[in-house]
Length: 294
Image (cartoon, rainbow, N blue to C red; front, side, top):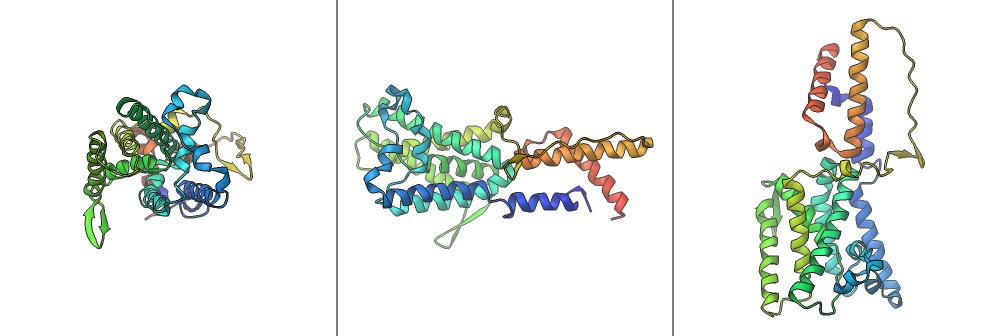
């Protein structure tokens, strides 16, 4: 039995990943669905126009918030728009969230939506003269998630029309298709009302994130996002020092380090651990196994 078999760690993992606390991916899907339902039942509000982003947003800094909200808005006339996006977010996002951690995944997804929107606006101004158009949909953020997943798990298998396809090939095909469609739009070919520029910008953001191992949770650690229970922060427990034998003191110190590292894994994901921190967990695991005789 190793350190990961401890009862309190198993309890933490159940709450974090297995349904004790709803995953961030499910939360994002529920928000998208709620906005979509609002678009259908309150058509007079024209939520797509209110939350979507236009090329002229660069002239209207007070509307820059739309570079985020457009990613939670979908065309009410096309139900497949939101269905495909949410299915892909669920398909690729669940495991990615479990690896990165809730906070890191959320920062990555939201920043990718913003960068995809910026890329779309830049392309509209650079190649299409800023013609009136409206960007809505989570596709840019979802493409970023799919690219990171494909880079981390390139040989996982997807079944497309019952045909097994490796993830890297499937995602690569989608990116190539978007690129060729974008090239077609530059040549004034009819390519439909699809924001290929946002797809490509989101894919590029995902590629750079994975390639350079950015950790947005650490960069934005100043934000007050500590774990909460019942709306209040977990208090730090005041520990009294008691005289111990040297071996017992070292054991207590190691266990305190392990507790801190497990908290870090829960907040930021296993990928946030340094090589030294991983070595500490391995050392604790070996000692725990020797004490348990297993």
